[in-house]
Image 1 (cartoon, rainbow, N blue to C red):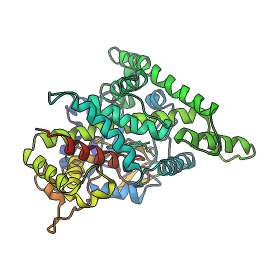
Image 2 (image 1 turned 60 degrees about the horizontal axis):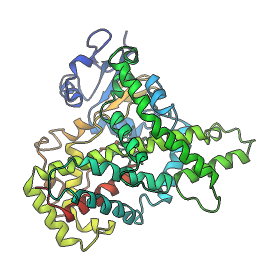
Image 3 (image 1 turned 90 degrees about the vertical axis):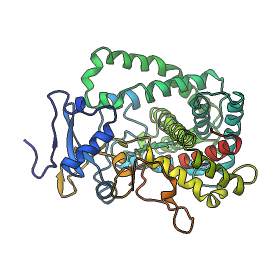
Image 4 (image 1 turned 120 degrees about the vertical axis):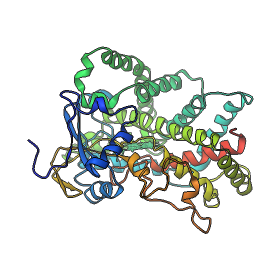
Length: 439
Ligand code: HEM
């Protein structure tokens, strides 16, 4: 029996729920279903009901206005397997998540995120990446082969205080794992249908990730040990050092019974570091890949973009140049609108009873925003399936920042790495456009 005033929805078939009906583009299918059920409705994923939020208005109503209710996470077999139920992204809502999140924001800011001084660091990596790309001498190549290591190195510098050479086995092991996890691992399937882990071929996928992740996990463990051995409280070199400082503070105050204090430990540090790599690399690299593909397949847009950059940026690009590049900003915003990278955000769980579009959402409900449907809403976007950066330019030729383009989701639980990703995408893209023609 459904709880009172529960949203309408779709149960599908026993055991699998709606899974057999989602098709190759689930976000598009869910958007289609919203025509029948409305902005807020439930679907059964395997055996679990998930409330889908399909409009900007309902996403703001739940994730911003009722952020204290709609910001939890559920722990399942797969969150334990991939994230140890630690780190940041899979912590449930509450004081521990809040204190770890605050630490993440402050520490990233300390090392330049959200400030102009980050620009030159990223530019240095962009230069090295472009040099690798130039070695192909104009012949076709897989751009991800160069973008992913470069983006990984940006996180590496923030977290470990150093970058890797592109042929370093440690970097290559990290990239292999990113590929295994990011592209081939059906996380959502295991989240909703954990029983599949006992059944071939799904069991094989779990075993494969276990094998592939060992070198990266060892690398992080070794880096933490090296940092501990060389730690100097007068000079915090990177994210790991800042976390060690917190661990020492907590050790020095054994009377501190606050539940957040016990989370300053090595297990948490390990999972936090791992998550910055796994959450921040493939996403940013994929956004850049979409940008290159869309520029390449739209020669008029490519020409306009290149002309703007050539006319307004002298020499190496700086973050200060952004203000003079409205069309470039429009292209980036349109890439995010058109292909949002993370269509469903990350599953949220309600920590108390909430409301959405007039329905009652019980405590403990899994809720998913459909970012795709916000970005392809035909009422807001004329011809949403057309890639058209001009829609983000106003009548005076200025860039119009849109609060309806939400690739990082919104509210207190939105992406921790938003500013970092946006800076990287701007610098990498402009530098590639300065160096190459993507014909
Ligand atoms: C284009 C690049 C990126 C996109 C599209 C993206 C998107 C997202 C989305 C949709 C979420 C879920 C937020 C929610 O539940 O509402 C998220 C969470 C998160 N992202 Fe990103 N992300 C990107 C880059 C990064 C980078 C570079 C980092 C690393 C610094 C990062 C770290 C995280 C973390 C730690 C969380 C969990 C936050 C929490 O639960 O408090 N992301 N991201």
